[in-house]
Image (tube, rainbow, N blue to C red; front, side, top):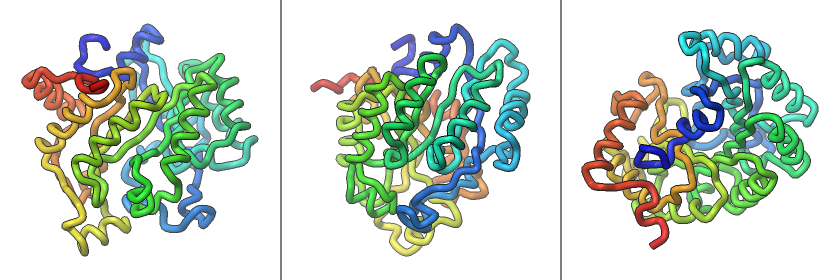
Length: 306
């Protein structure tokens, strides 16, 4: 697990490629079946996609141009390599030929060593997974599934439009093809108490996940959740930063040490955030978490098999 108190995704990539590896977001101009009426309308109650799209990530720009601009932003790291991160909306939601064209555009860049594809567990099929398996023989391929919760009642409440069983199917089918598979999970979703949130760690530990992104719930403007939060604030637990750190510490102790952590917090632009307003950068938060873990002699997996 390296010198970290948790399995660190960035360190794993560095060992794999022998240098620093940076994700570069690209926008393929995708939509979402939970917005266009295929699975639902309005999208997930918490979602405002504009809160995490970099300025250079505009779908009218070709993928190679977006990558060039993103790489230029990190030009001080001349020796590092890049992973093209298809991030916005559902990045497997399109025709098979269109998907192939976009992914292969990204992989044609000489400094790009792989792709990470953010998607929904109900938006992959065996044909597409077989294609990713072919790519994975030559490149780094990571599929990131928006799991968000392991509880179907919660998934229905936030209008996710899929079940946890669909997440389990997608994760297992992806992993068995020797493709790296990640999950996104939100801590603090409405009506989930501490016991429920910690249970997610135990359940996810039974799945063949290579990586996990954790996010504290953020209430952001122009979302259905923002309206619900205004009307039903008692349904929500808005963490202080210290409360969230202590929750994470317990969560990590229950989580399998085989799962690498890619991030712990969401970082929506401050002007969009209604709550909580912590005002810290990712690296500052991580430093606080690690300090607390050292104080309490805590580490990932400490209680995972009890």
